[in-house]
Length: 208
Ligand code: FES
Image (cartoon, rainbow, N blue to C red):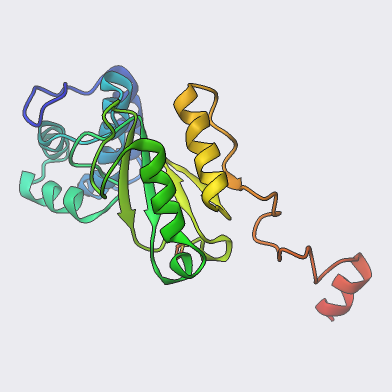
């Protein structure tokens, strides 16, 4: 299951997930489950081939299952960035370079990714097949910029050293470091710590 047109059949895990996804929609509206089914297909490819992507054969299987014209599934799979239409490495590095992340040093994150993986430009996969680097637009986490999404996880508040350490850990085969802020920031609280609602009485006053 590694080519665009090699046969694709949903496995048992996928079938269970598909039944649950389709059941969320009224009878006759099963096409509304197209996005979850594409995600399920991508997860199956990750399990079977070690690369989370959706080949055309899988899009055709989704179309057949939902009674849709294949081209309608292709349109969706090629529009949304979360669907990979080409094989990707085990670790998909999605670097946000939109203005807030750029102002907070995304150029350094891109450089660190290139240095650690040997990738020369966006869209490439490293020679060892471990990493693919993609440029993405705002990931909706600007408050903790700059952001690097790796597979489904966000790594936040990065700089060169922390990005290099993160990628070195992944390369070594060690368990993935915990996602979230890499400087220990609580959620998206200010760097200087909590500045509001610091006591129950303050919360009560603000509510009045
Ligand atoms: S600009 Fe990078 S997360 Fe919004």
